[in-house]
Length: 210
Image (tube, rainbow, N blue to C red; front, top):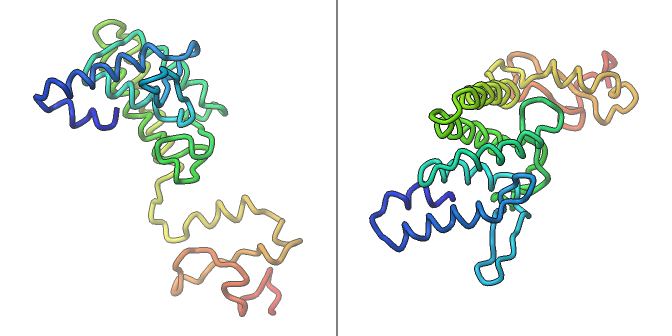
């Protein structure tokens, strides 16, 4: 599906046939709950859902460019809504379960949720002519996901690398475990906003000089 983005523009009949076949075969092997497999063995027909996290999103994007199928898109999106496990609006994934399986990404992945926004927008275009209400819902959800991504993943250049948030989360644990104590670096030396005791031993811990 990723190669389809560029390959669809070629005039090679064999490539075009292969692309349409890929979209169709993946759709036919969709699971009952709406999940699209990431791979199908061409000899045995065996489906593979191991890298499940982004396969359906790429299918939505690819099919919207080549062979729109609004009905299947809706079933795929229903499955993805179930991957928002804490009602935050963002998708969760198991470790190494997308095409970047050499990266140990898990939980609310940045790439996965950016792709989710793209897929929702592509779905909205597909559904605009057949189900305007659902199309608008997809656009609203896309904007909600985009806002969440920007709020949680985007560094706003405030100079302290979210020091206050880090300090709030670690709370009183540093009082009982000096090894995890955090420091606020003075403005003139601020690089990362937080340093550990082992990185800068001469600084005081909780007001007590070393």
